Length: 423
Image (cartoon, rainbow, N blue to C red; front, side, top):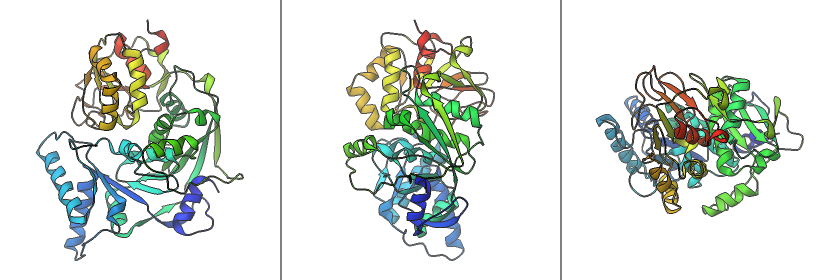
């Protein structure tokens, strides 16, 4: 069995599983945020009206809550949702509630690894489509809807059809001008936004072993944009070291068998990869950055669970140091712990000296909700993961997706720019 099949087998008490088997699995961790949380609460209220008594959750210690999408509150509804979440966590004794503006907080998919909330070998579900992100640590991580999350909260288990697995092998170390974002955009361009529908995307090869954990997280994050049920990378020493720094040392790793089967294997040479940009209006609509060098921009956005990890900010700082941006540029670290580290290491000063605006962790601009939405006909280059019509603002705005290096270089020139071409 491969790693996904073995995790699901262990979680369902089976000795073996095959693709398309349907099993009930025990869940190890579950997450909701300020959008999915109120939705789950609404499901609970409907169940109560039908006569169900809901007095406790299956295990409050395995539940955690993040405030990230509409913070700081954009209107009275979003403010009330934060109150709903606070009342919910108090009622059910949920202690892991990352409150906006109070100590550590940030984007849920960043907190999941930054705070070691999810560990190798675990089954993790969250009320958000990019829950896949944390599969980079060797966990089965998948997003679920409100009703399914409500069921998990009450029962501690959920059913899955065992997905087929697509294996993406990377040979060699990525060149300095290429990041994981370029690799995953290349993959999505190759297989399409439905190319992994209800499948697992597994990444391996010596090129993945060479990658840092934060770069690996970019890969699994954007498996969602290929339609995948989950993304996963087998844990190794880098995984152990990353988690140990965050105080997590006790967990049971799972690894694929030597004769593990995959539906299809895709192979890539790192040396052949180029800086890639996804053009409007789909992550699969890719082109090389150099082929878009005449594309004028209004805004550069460096943020989100995809592109505002600490190493992403380091990459941006290497480009912006000693330079000035020519367009509106916003940098929003993905968690306060990352913000603080960037401040202590001088990165925030580099961003501000370059003329960029630095803001708090939030999903606001990424999902077109607030904190810098796009106007009609505005063009943005972004480190985020989606560029569908209206994703970051007006339905007639345009978003180009790229790596932190490409976004930073483009901010300096005001046009889409390959970082190698920056003078």
